[in-house]
Length: 198
Image (cartoon, rainbow, N blue to C red):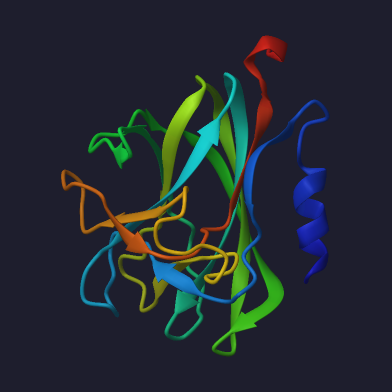
């Protein structure tokens, strides 16, 4: 089923381009990002920094993840939110609650702990982001499912503590974000410069 990795990018509109990419999940590591968190006895939200040098219009977001401990997928019930970063700290309330029109979840040939990694294509209602520094949070909701969901990193050894872009985490909405985890969360934002948007 690895052919889907190529098909993911065939879904990109002709005029779309990569706005930001931290890389594709390679199965090296995963962090719990789940509103349910049944296996891990509590929810956790994960977010990763990204920067924009110009205003853009976003229409797709891709990411990778895995179900744990049994590797059994559930219906995709994702919440994607973007937070403004001010003086190095993400704001508590999201700037944008991304409106997903469709999430395509497809199994890859990559495995971790003998369980498959999944690629996701999120089609979104287009939205505009001004130049600046932001946090993208991707959280699944596996309520009524035996497994929790882990957001895959690209490589946990590619980023050290104190690096420019950071992983942030918190236990629930309304709480301040904390940093201290290493790695790069896997995602790609696609769209076009706002100056080219129709």
